[in-house]
Each structure stands twice: as structure tokens, then as C-alpha cells.
Length: 331
Image (tube, rainbow, N blue to C red; front, side):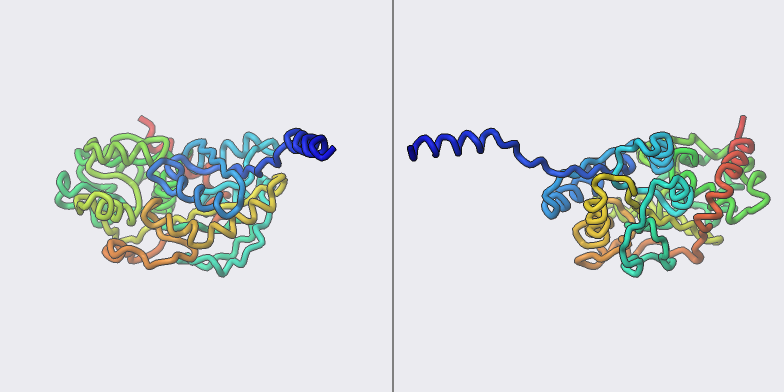
């Protein structure tokens, strides 16, 4: 009888399905989840804590990610969207897809006070023109020098319709030139080697020597110093100031994994996530880290002025300003 009961119990155990782990689907941009980016280490750290599966989905750069989200609407598979910046958050919030994060906004360590109830920042940096010191001895010292400089010395830019750096540069131009931005774009156009869909493609062309300049971040030289032990690539300091990017994440209100999404956003503000930002995403962390930044960050260009439109200003004008750029640079 005892053997029969034991066999029956074993059979019941085998017949009982294992409890599946929860899966958190996070939309982000492609360079974040590259093997050299922070994504793999963030995934490993969070999965150890949550006993869940973190699944990255990378539809392209930040603007492309928002475009996909808007197309999917209520049918989106995303639980969290990570990698929109403040130039896109107002437009993203207007979709009605995002819920309030419920976190203490004072956890955010950003150059501007953080007040957004729907998005929390995970990193920030100022845009900059990065130049190759072996190909360019006298870099531009201002945006105006870039616009009016030697057309034979090219720059690689990103498309503001698909890329957050591309949009950031468009806003940088607009913040400096205002109503004369179209005229400035026409002057700059001969210096533009190409416009790529995203940051990764642009920076690859630059490091392959296709152009002596590329739009990136003041933090980019830190990568070359730390990872490659070279000071060949530097950021040009511009007299007018530099445009700020703050990257953020938000949760989807209708997500069946909403509580897990909140857990992820809380995790995002701590060392398990933030420690990966300086030397994997090569930006400044917007939350708590377990150690100070590497010394290479102390030598980076410090903008004389921070330029930034509000999220609402960008949401109201983005399409008009993109049309202005398209018309001015059409050949």
C-alpha cells in the first residue's frame, strides 16, 4: 500500500505543470542591447533579483521605437519602454499608453530637476561633435564654425525622423539659430557626408575614417580612453553651448506585468542598473551607483551652457522643424 501511494504521489508531481516564470518585455534601442552595451549585464542582474525572464526588443533607434509603439497602440507587446528621451516623452505620453511610475522623482540625478510622473531617467549626456585628431587639427569651436566651415571636411549625422541623436542635433540647431535655422541648414548641407538611420551606423562610419567628424556625445571620448587606450577622438567644445539629452523609461499602463514593470523601474534607479551606464552606455548615470565615475570622465568637455527645449515644446513643433530641415537640405 505504501509503495502504491508513493508511486501515485510521484505520478501527480510529474503531471503538475511547472509554474512558468514571468516575462518582462522591454522595448529599447539597438545599441543598448548590443553585446558591448549595458543590456546583457542589466538582464543578468535583474533576472537574478526578480526570478523572471527579461526580454529585450530593439526596433531601431529611439524615434523608430516610438513610431513602432504608436503603430501597435493597445496591441503592443511592450511592458516597459526604455530609451525615449525628453524630446519624445510628451508625445509618448499623449498616446495614453503609459502609466504613472509611482517612484520618488528626487531619486533622479539629472542636470535639470525631474518632475515627470510617467517617465524616469536612466542616463544623460550632452551632444557633441566628435572629431578625429589625426584627420582634423583645427576642429570647429562653435556651431557657427561648423555650419560655415570647410565643406571638404565632412560630418556624419543621424536622421531626426528615426534617431534621438539626430533629433537632438536638429533641436540644437533650432535652439541656436531660431528663425534662421533653415538658412543655417543650407550652409551646413555641403559638409554632411551622409545621414544615417541611427547612432550606431554613424559612429561606425566615423571610426572607419569615412569622415573626420560625427555627431555623438561629450562622453564618447571616455570610451576610446578606457576601452581602447587612445586619446585620438575628442569632443569639440562649442561656444554657444551643447544640447542636453536625458534618456528615460516608462511602463505600459495595460501591461499584464505592470507590477513587475514597476519593480524594473525601481531597479533601474539603483546600482544593479546604473553601474552599467558609464562604461557600457558611455553616458552619465541618472541614479545611484556603487562607485565614483572613472577618472576619464573628469577630462571630458564641460559645456559652457546647457541648451534644452521642454518636452511640450518639442511635441508641438517636431514635425514642423523636421519639415524645415528636409526642405533646407533637399538637393
